[in-house]
Structure formats: C-alpha cells, structure tokens
Image: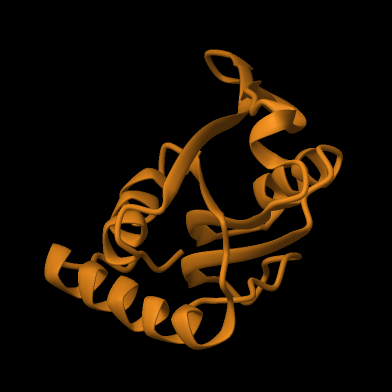
Length: 135
C-alpha cells in the first residue's frame, strides 16, 4: 500500500483550493466535521467561510480494541434541530473505502436536511462515495 504524506502547507493549500470551488457552487448553512480526520479541514473551512457554523459528529468502526464492526456506528450524534431544513456540508479528510461516509450520510439524511453535500481533502479511487468536492 502506498502512503502519501503531505506537509501542512500542502493540506492547507488543498483546503483553500476546495473552498474556492465550493464558494462558486454551494451556499451551505452548516458544516459537519467527522471526528477525527475531518476536524482540521472542517475548522479551516469554517474559518475560510467567515466562521460558518460548525458541528461535530463521530463514527467508529471499532467496538473494542482490535474488534472491528462490519459498518461504522454513530458514537457522537447530531441534534435534529441543528440539521433539519438546512444545507449541510459534510467534511472529512479522506474518502478511503467510503464506508464511514455512507453511514454518516445515511444518518444525516434521516435528520431531514434541505441538502447534503460531501467535501474531502482526498478521495481514493476505491471509495464507494464520490464526494461533491475534493482536490
């Protein structure tokens, strides 16, 4: 497996590039960052968009040390009133297999947002989720 290590300046540059694309295309109400990997890009996007509202949620594949579930569980949920009728920008660092993004998207869609789009800093070709925004 090839691992790509990026310097912080390259990550920040990628986030700025993605924000330029988002700004032209999507006027969202709320950013939802997926803990842990999505937190840094979500905070940066919030700053770039003049401190747009930022929410945090968490999904985990692991039940216990070394014991992996078949699919991720939502371990830090959102409040329905924070999502219902709103345009949501869901942010993570990487779309790897896409399993976490599928679970989180299904969960958020159950809270009745007006619209939901996904932004990730990097997306692997094997991901079953094709993000709306990536660089």
